[in-house]
Image 1: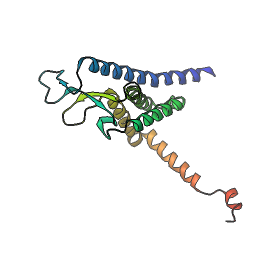
Image 2: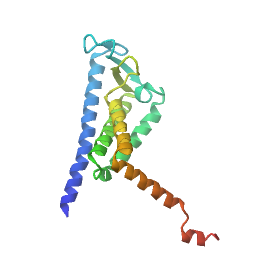
Image 3: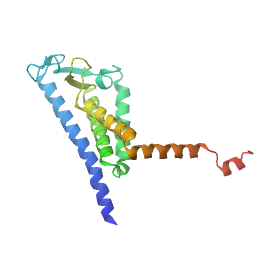
Image 4: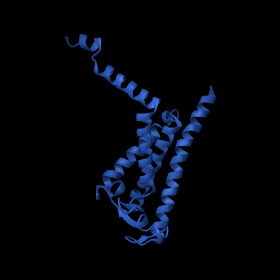
Length: 187
């Protein structure tokens, strides 16, 4: 009886290991940028590719990729909710496919990485600059990749489509009045 519990715990640990790896990579990279690259300056880490990608140190008070600047408090609350929900459901996610555990681990790590910045700095440090898009960081990338994996799961895997159909039929059943409700309401 205890073997499934051990398996579920190992699977939960995998989700958290992915999240911790993202948090570590995100926080270390941001600390290096803050230490060695002055604010609002750029550095070409790969000579010859400066026209394509550089590191540009900026402070972001909005959402990922610099969207909605100045709404840091809103995104602080959103990040807290995301982190708490994923942690709260981690036991159920442990029984999910490896793809879903990776996706949620990436999202947890990304949300937590930017949450740490907002709590400790009041803003998020961004630095990856492809010149044709907003400057972003490792945490933003993890959230986006996790979201793409979730979309892939939902749209292109048999399990994801079955989950979607099951939730729709369950939703329809809950919308239908049951006999005990209608009997008590004169219908």
